[in-house]
Length: 361
Image (cartoon, rainbow, N blue to C red):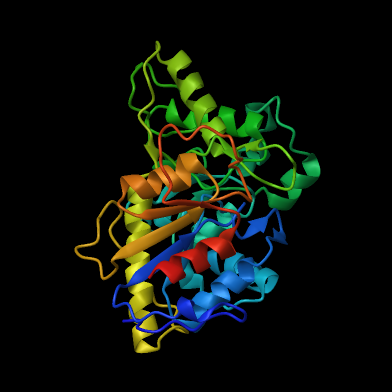
């Protein structure tokens, strides 16, 4: 248990605490630690402060597309702070728990997600670009160039002879026209077989489809928020309904603000705390919870979610019994209506969030 806090340079003595309460943090990345690829001021100092005091924290993001180790290496270098690959939960990290459930999957997202899915352990991974390589007429309005098809497309031996088991959207696709068409083909197919169309019209898709987040908007280096995977999901659902007599699509959604992701993250925080206590922070062995399982018990009196998006970070924290720190460096702007959530605090940036919480302990 952490009993004494080491203050950052320049902080007053009242920052020191002997409180027996245990706390932990979860940080969004885009709009909190980074804006695009550029660090947000003093974000690295905030994490260094927690490292010095051995306070458990993780990065909890609706972004993805890379292996956790790759993403953490970039963030560590950008912020000049040591972060373990076990301290990040990306939008698709919980997909690791589905490896033994599905064999052949359609992995949707940037071209890198195919490699991510394979490294997670999925045995038969198909990316939409592989289907375009097989037959470019499947997506007549695709913007993918022949150069990209040649570079990333792969010839899959059993593409049309073995059914898909599931569709997993890993991150925001870059070729919406192609991905919308191919996803629609698979979830409306005859038992997951490509080049087929089922006769039935129903709310249950031919194979399960998972979305890794439902963010309508996200913040990058442009001055206005951009559409995210939530917008893409809306289009998939709308098209499915149109093709199935108005019936809604039954899909699975993870990522913030779902309880599935917050419970998963809570378990990851508990596992990381154990590694801090045992001095095993260089270990890469992680105990993964069953998807959808809540922690049997928690050592933390409070967990603070630091985020910029009220619709995912703050609402998710409130629904799952966490505290919330809303920052002004991303999606949220002063004057935005917060009619569905009440943040524990609204602060200028992540450094203010961390120091304010620690002062109150």
